[in-house]
Image (cartoon, rainbow over all chains, first blue to last red; front, side, top):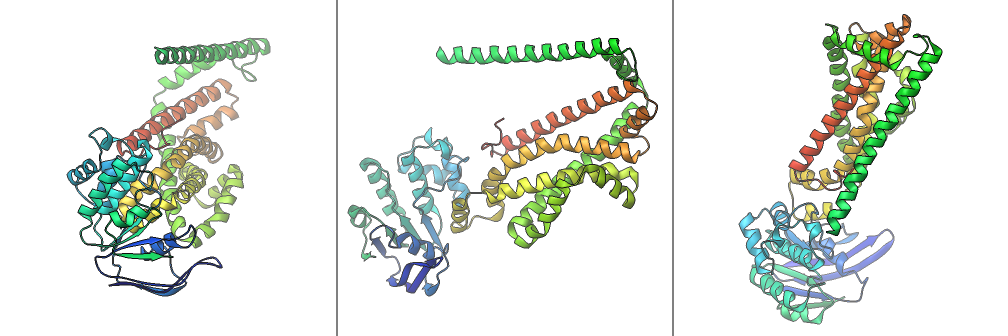
Length: 187
Length: 268
């Protein structure tokens, strides 16, 4: 069981997250929603170890792989190389995964800076899924994807989540159901 | 069709530019020749024809290669030493703030102090044989160091966070995140430094007069009022400096391309 206990995170004097507590059973999928600026992304940053909390404890999350709100791809590398370099997967695994989310042979050899917004998003999603981790963190995963592509990506995510504890921040009410979320947090 | 027209226009304009440059050089050579004929004194202003004659006699001199290699090895050695030191200390400074703070006044002083002051100071501490190594290193170091540091500091923090989350090994972080960010700064620093190391290195040799160096020959040309020798050696220095710069920059760009980290570094 992963747990957040009395978590407070500050940016300077401003507490973005105050005395927040929640439990995340192993293998569960938790959908997190709430108005903009309420601290959803801050919570994910704290869980993934990128932000140090002012107070409170985080336990049981282990290693995390993260789909950030921005794609954060290595701009000079191809889609395939982005995956092999960051996750340590083989080229074949990377190519297979990209094919499953709608890439063709030409697109997988394009550098990240030459990819469209939707393609870059898919590479970022595949990266989070392929990386070995105990916890999967998805921040607005399907942002900017059309319905057909969203369906392909959704199938890929559900098929490859490998029972990892998953935290999904979303504004889209469909995401929770489509990702089989069993817990909901409204911040 | 339209693309090929644009390309043809570009090629034509490049050709025109090259012809215009050659014409401009020819114009100034002619002006130089006319003025030297009017002045009629080889000491005050030697003619370009005489300089070319002297240049060929210098090139035929049996000691030419040893003189050039003496200065070349030391000045280029100083450049490479500064490059290594600048990159290494740039990296350390980006990690340890106290190193950056300690080096800040040193780089400010080196940049602001006239090169002649350093040459005289270094002559007090070391022999003149290795003066040009130390001086060219000293002049190049701040340029490489500051640019490397700036490049590392301008690395995208979001990519650094991504690398941390995905537990990318340090070597991959350096290769795929830091280097693409540092390379544009490093390339422009090298381009500036290559000219600088020759100017400062030769100046050091002229003041320190080490035996068998280009600087020694420039000094004796000045003492014996051999204006033609002075200008012939100046031409040789400029040619060696430009050739080395072109070769080094081409090798650097080839290496960057080979490593697949082109980014914005290869433009210009």
